[in-house]
Length: 331
Ligand code: AHR
Image (cartoon, rainbow, N blue to C red; front, top):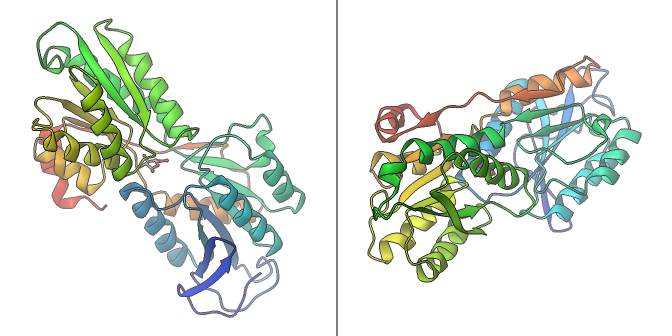
């Protein structure tokens, strides 16, 4: 697998995909194991959000630091592209495959192909919905249900403020992530679960904005036209919340006051909106998974046992905490 190439700039086109190699890559055996060098094939979801950009950078930087050759592909949010990329990595006999599945279901066949080729697979960021857990070695990432619960708990704890027109009802609109994606399913579930505690809180409209700014803006425009009154917006990521801000301001309303806004991620632009009083609460979802991923890759390639589930540590931010955290925020 290991080729004599210089880092970062090599790009190989595979169908609609962009596959590129970066990291150390000077010679070695076909498997990369004889000389201790490792090649990882990483199938990324896309570049849909600020979170994803930070996640990609973390993975690319960490691979370089760890001396791991990285073959990287961007699936443009399409499962078929990710499956093609994984098949291409199997053909290229990489030492380890890592990926963040765009949706939860439909992975068993390609993961079985990797297993039969004796290539270990690591799930990062998002999980797959498969009964056969032997198809991957470990899953590194957040607990999205807990993230949704934290968002819902904020509405429960701030119910008086969140009832922006004081009519005794808290009408919530939800911007969902990509349909079928683990964070969209789980955050929605967690939010619903936490808000059950107060029957005044109701999700009156919920639609996908595909985790993008543009999607968030367009769907929010529709919500503003179709809903009589909106007290709270729960955007399942910062980017959709930021798009929605534009729609809210264009409708002559004050985000953060007329409509309370809760998001997930805590990327720089989201934290800025929170510090500026336009968002009310952000649940952190850390994209900095690269260093842990590279450690895990070394272990699984060496045949060592790893924990089947590795959880990311995360916090939450209110407006004051965002002001304090912003100057040192890494992404
Ligand atoms: O899977 C993580 C989610 O994907 C992030 O919350 C979102 O911003 C991204 O697109």
